[in-house]
Image (cartoon, rainbow, N blue to C red; front, side, top):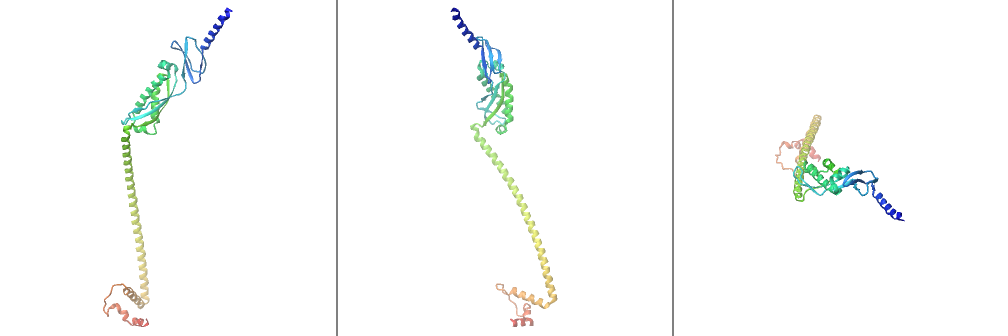
Amino acid sequence: MRKSVFLLPTLIVIAVLAISSVFIVDERQKALVLQFGQIVKVKEEPGLGFKLPLFQNVVFYDDRILSRDLDPLEVTPSDDRRLIVDAFARYRISDVERFRRAVGDGGEERAASRLDGILRDTTRNVLGTVSSNDILSVDRAALMLRIRNDAIAEARSLGLEVIDVRLKRTDLPPENLNATYERMKAEREREAADEIARGNEAAQRVRAQADRTVIELTSDATRQAEITRGEADAERNAIFAEAFGADPEFFEFYRSMTAYTRSLTPGNSSMVLSPDSEFFNYLKSDQGARSAEGE
């Protein structure tokens, strides 16, 4: 009976000690076995682990990729235009032993705080070597890569691996917005004026070319018309000459009738001629008299 009384507590103590000597590492964790604050074992693979009860304890750390948002940071690029930068980083605990020695009991929160300082310093250093236009442009991948590479070396001393650094937003301080807006407006107006000037110059060239083409076409058309008119006059004169040679009397009659028609039409200026003027020779002739009687 006495043996059973002592056996039960002994079994309970043994069970408690056995249970306390076993720990489980999740696949999302890494574990350190500590004895009086000193690292005695590292457990990075998921599964069961063992430790000495009472003398040793286990500390777990996250093995996943972690994110850290930086507070808005003011930077001064090479052109002295201040900017407000928002950034974030992704990192993981790569060396759990070094991590423990670097941060002690502070754990992940203390490591994140120290990582903030590293990221802020590297961001200022990198962005301070380029102009604000480079930072504000959409192609900032090279700058983010430089910040990450600089942060990797410093974060390694904490047992951390910086995987990525991203600039979420880059803004001008409120007091600089109006000045920047006016400067950008002036630049755009200057560019617009340059484009208008180039357009006017091109329009003048086109207009001058068009005027030259018009003059050339008009001159050529006038030349062709004069040639045609001259050829027509020559042909007409040839016909008149042939008609004159065939019947001089008819030709003289035709010439006289044409002159009378042109000079005696209504609305023409009055003519003062003597009755014996040569202009009426044909009317006084026998042919004219006979023509007048026939009318």
